Image (cartoon, rainbow, N blue to C red; front, top):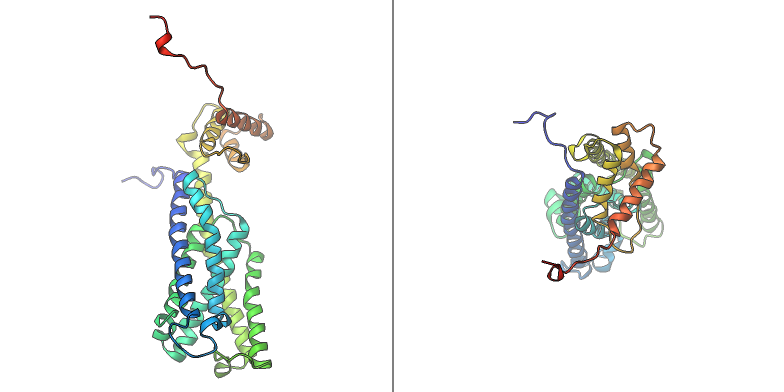
Length: 317
């Protein structure tokens, strides 16, 4: 059995492939569960005969947060499919943040359902009955796994996590107006039966804040793991063991050129070249020269010189 130091260094492409597969599966599950649950609610499949049934389901924070999370998951799908096709996987930050907003909402729903709603109406109703099994239980679990394991492309700072509370604040304000001021909605969350609404608002915001920080911690933990393995791969892997850095850059450009598609923009992997520069300690070769070397060889790989074809039949015997 290999010791920890003797274990082979994980290839960055294999890590990305695993994340693509996990993300593709979970995103598909989240989208399907949300569509099924929302459809059942809209067509009033359960005939609850309450304002929150049918299209009134859009009054529910649970429904809205699940929809936002499903939208975030659907935005991830094209990148995950392309990641498998091209051996690359990188999500734009705004997509990660969209999913973050949805994840905070559904985790808040899960926590409230498993505590307050379960206490008042029973665990079976809160977590398993009707569409609650989709929106209160399964979707939150899958979305937390998705955001924590597969959608971990960016390190999330504390300030970045604060604005994820805005949908909760906006809904709380709307709920207060529609329920306690204009009386156009039922108190479907039964806030008045638990405690005064100011206390309830503070408690909900506190739970939402805790949910955002938990998700941020789990997300950043995976991000750190992936980042460390990428750095380790380019700094220590035998795949990039050459006598000089130019050969390592040639190797990198050849690998990256394999996934290039005609008409696409060409991006220079600056961060990776910096890692290689640290590995070879190339103080005498400026980084901008290394970038030029990469680009020149990359272009040579995607536009090879056309060699004259020789018809073997016409060759002299």
